[in-house]
Amino acid sequence: MTIAEVNRAPTRLEGRFRAMVVCWILGLGSLVSWHSMLTIGDYFYNLFPLDLATTGKGGIGTFIGICVLVAAFGVADAHVQGGMVGDLSFMSPEFIQSFLAGLGASGALTSALRLITKAAFEKSDNGERKGAMLFLAISTFLEFLCILLYAIVFPKLPIVKHYRSKAASEGSTTVSADLAAAGIQTQTEDDAKLLERLSNKQLFLQNVDYMLCIYLIYVLTLSICPGFFYENTGSHKLGPSWYPIVLIAMYNVWDFISRYIPLVKCLKLESRKGLMLAILSRFLFIPAFYFTAKYGDQGWMITLVSILGLTNGYLTVCVLTVAPKGYKGPEQNALGNLLVLCLLGGIFTGVALDWLWLIGNEKF
Image (cartoon, rainbow, N blue to C red):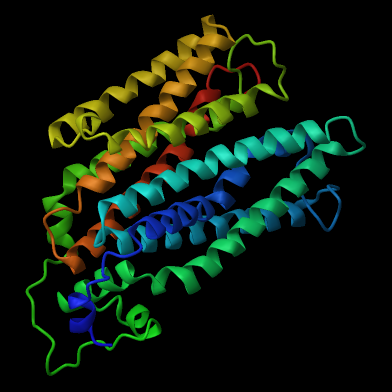
């Protein structure tokens, strides 16, 4: 089958719902490893290090090994998110929304699993370690499931073939291998169209506000979550073992729910100025968290954490579904990669700034 035949195929929109479901599952699986590291923070705080070989006995070698593994998670996450968002950016915005909703679901699912495994092993011998190991085993299974799903099921969906062939006909070279794997002939040098393409620099400059938006969303979020939750978060009755996990769970649940709000057209924020204003206003969370930790109780803190998650998920979907519009396939692909680069840059900056909460803390 050739690209032209796929473009004319009457079944090119077949499987839209299946594709959305697959995108959702891929989103869930692609961030499971990251959320796994976040949700066992209580285990690291109490029994660090988590080490299968030495049964938690520790040592500098073990510490370095865990740091290397965590770094590997970061590298893998960057490749997966960059590749998937770039791939879906030249497809339907519905696919990006489903993928991003899956990312949010991964946080909610891992929080639920962590609460279940922690409760199940709480009173058993070395229970915290056993619960963490079972939790990580379940997360690993989900990762392997998504690898098979993306390699076998996703590229064979008719609608995916249609969008990829369309991008290739517009000059994209990044989907050639995917098309070949799906049994579709790519264009030869003789019949390929020489289309004018924008450079990455031009794309960045034309969308610098979107780049800044996605960067600032995650600078703010990661400067608070999860590090702040494991420090002095005010008066509470849940205890130091359960309280941070509950806070992370509430953040993840509302982050997941909010990613569906933009599906209601009248509730979706598409104005570039409106997005920037909403994102900048989130920096009011910094004094809000500070004073809530100092003067508020656990009810106020849980409410504030829920709003943080709600705004994070909602604004992320709004930016990543609006930005790629108005470009051809190759530019949409590149723009998706650039947006994820800024997103991950925001995560890095936010995590680096997270330690500032320790200033003035009695434990510092």
